[in-house]
Image 1 (cartoon, rainbow, N blue to C red):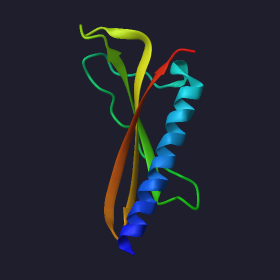
Image 2 (spheres, helix red, strand yellow):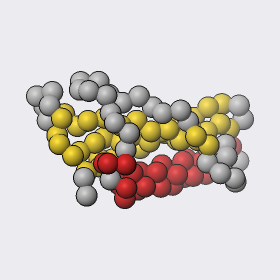
Image 3 (cartoon, helix red, strand yellow):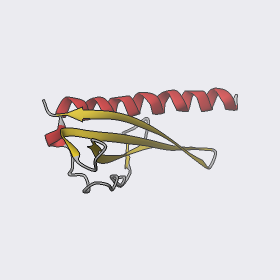
Image 4 (cartoon, rainbow, N blue to C red):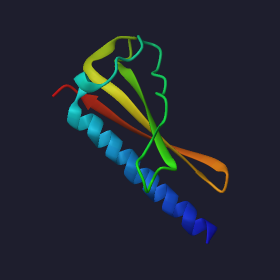
Length: 104
């Protein structure tokens, strides 16, 4: 029974992560917060809970420039990482989901 709950949680986390990535892609680069200068990677935002009935799941996002290999950002392209966190029986879990968002 515990493994069923765990796999169900991973499914919910995957769906929530995909939802947030699609929102970022649909809205485009200009809607994203500004990332830190290279070579730094973005830090995760403060977690926000999903509405009921999934309130034990929360999400945060980190935005980074995409390096062209010479420590120069590729214009109009950002790496977006969405982290979904949740707890089950007092234990914390998280999954990260990554995509790249370009200018429309």
